[in-house]
Length: 153
Image (cartoon, rainbow, N blue to C red):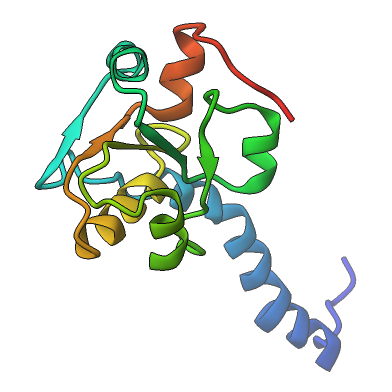
C-alpha cells in the first residue's frame, strides 16, 4: 500500500467549506417540517369551514373574500369573487378600497392549515379596526378537497 500524500490547500478548503455546505443543503428537509403552524384561533376572528363560507356567500351579498396567497397561486385557482391581496403587500388603503366600512364581513384564506398568510392578513385587518372577520383556516386545500367551485385566470 502506498502512503497517502499530505492534503493540499485545495483539499483543506473542500473539507472546511464544501462539506459543511453540502451537509447543510441536505439537512434542510427536516427544517421544512418544522415550519410553524398558524395559531389555532385568532381572538375576534370566527373560524369557518368551506361549507360555511358558501353559506356566507349566499346569505351576505356584501361579503368580501380575500385570498392572501401569491398572485401565481391565485391565478391557478381561487374562490369566485375573491380579491388577491398578498399578506405581505396588504396595506390599510388596499383593504379600505375594498371595504370602506369596518363592519363589512370579510373572509380571509390562504393555502391551508400550514399557511400563515391569512392569519397575518387577519391580524393586520383587525389592528386597522375591522371586526367582522371570518377565517377559512382550512384554506384553499379544504375548498378544493371538498370540490367546491373554483375560478382560474
